[in-house]
Image 1 (cartoon, one colour):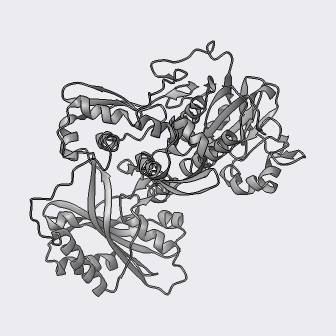
Image 2 (image 1 turned 90 degrees about the horizontal axis):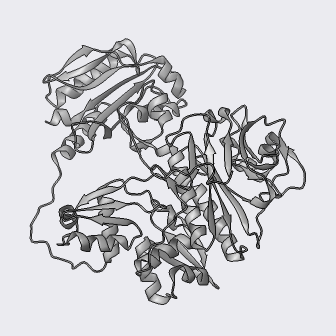
Image 3 (image 1 turned 60 degrees about the vertical axis):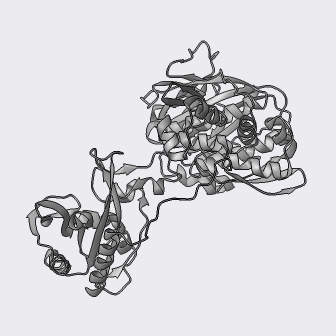
Length: 566
């Protein structure tokens, strides 16, 4: 979980009053935060909510605590949006021009300009901390978000976001005193060695310059040593972010812009002109408000919280968390704050109402229902299956349910149309819910080449796929998958293993020929029981084995246990 360090006086300034001792510790629960000690006038805070990156700064934390204590919600009038786009004229020529070649490298960039009082030590350290937390935690170690801050009085608009030849372009990187080419920076600079792998596989590198060719940054690696060296006392800044996910990028930009505004600075929007389509259009002016309103019925709020709120009362609690809320007699409509995008479901509104009312303000009620704990039928059946598999000589495995597009889609030779994607993943390695046990089994086999053959492994676990008939469009399935790997592993072997399993659970079945890109054509079949397709069995396609780096034949079967149990 993110940990931040804040200057005590600066935090109290954002809150609007001094809050210390037990009152401060209790107040931190509003931000799902805990007090982790102090060093002099620096407070250490641990944040327990990764869905609220706006809280990972002194300004953001102070803003939330101030609003909870009754402070007025600020209007951030410098935002554009779907309904309020700013013209190029209104941006006063603050323009970023994007190279078409960046579409397949690092396609998105957003920025804004800042002007105001000279930056002091506390604010400079907080800016650097915000940059690190946003780009490391929320930006997946700079893969999806990287941030740069520059002295805007040292360069000329329009800013150019280029795809540059790494051997021809050069500049003096931050902390160095001599010019290096972009490729040399990747190899020699400490930040290049740490983050260079993000872009080193491309023929050209993302390079930011001004209108006269002066380098601002080799993104997402390092700023230049002159324009990118912000110091105490600077009054005019340029903040840019580049990345691969435009919504995360725009949100991060909005968070930092609101932080500067709350610190007393004037914000000037910057327009980015793309030569290709983006989810937000070809011209995007940041800060940009893209969030959509979320509605919840008051009856649902009361059902989950065990209260009897009127819409106006529930809304008043929700507003203490910083969002604009409108009401009618039976429902609440929440418009997310400019710096928030964590409302994925009406339950998220209810959570804000609960926190806004006060977590300790709800009366505890003793349950008046008596229930007896017992194992579910699915659990009992799953244990029986495990015993059968172990009896057949298989070794049980346990896997993560989340994984990457590379493992679940690319390596499996499938389109991924029915795969469930996480809306706000913290890492691309855990971006999808697995649609099958098969990728997990192949992943184990791919790292087991030195073990004595034959290999026989299985797992009983959950998978999830899209299903329009379900309330939330997704169905979770209890699934059995097992793999045999050996030089002689084939359809006959795996079908005989399937036959043994079905015998021991007293289930009749037939096989029907099918085609599946994961399997060899003509050597796979659907498993049919009581007229339902309950699974698949066959030999894995050699291309899939090659994708996983597996050098021996693999025969695999996967069965939907829920369909058998019904």
